[in-house]
Length: 110
Image 1 (cartoon, rainbow, N blue to C red):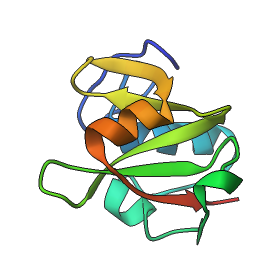
Image 2: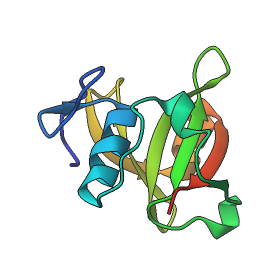
Image 3: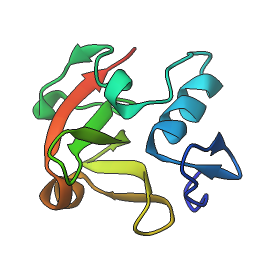
């Protein structure tokens, strides 16, 4: 999925937004999720950052200060997410994204 273009509202291999990436990824594992970062943040159970595992959902603030962006932990401090500013799906260090956007919470769906 890395390199897939950013497309607001998208959830296909031709274009995804942040929650669309989560929906598409979990769908591949047979799990249906809502296409909304805010709704996704209400699912699963809270996880502390020191217990972060691959597949955990990592939520970030928007410019308005509420949960509005989500990525998927890849492990080893990396997160994959659909970046509107980079116009594609990228893998970046969690610390870098958190510094830019502010970490809201981490959730484990599985």
